[in-house]
Length: 158
Image (cartoon, rainbow, N blue to C red; front, side, top):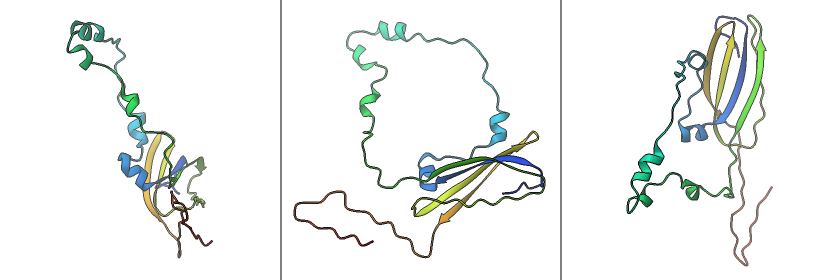
């Protein structure tokens, strides 16, 4: 890790499973846009739901309801066969002209991760990202069947 113009900076590292980020179309945070974003106008707001929904009782009343999505929530006891890789490290600091290298041990994983750096220093902010394939000469990920029937046998060499 180094700063392009050799200035000092403080940064954080995030290493996340690329498949997980693709599911949500996650973009690397842009510190400049966050710190210099427009702020919302502080106005007082309210709603009139009780007047609008209260006026339509009768046959249409049961159709207009708020909430109720709790029943559609996925079960939290679902088995997670492949644990996603999510690591957040830092903050780290480098001095003028300095370069740092990080060696990070990942759990057993086959795929690619996105390494994201968000940095700042002396009123300047920035971010960078790179997709890195996680690989070795030989990679195995052994798993057992989820269900076994009576009389079935499983052999898993180690």
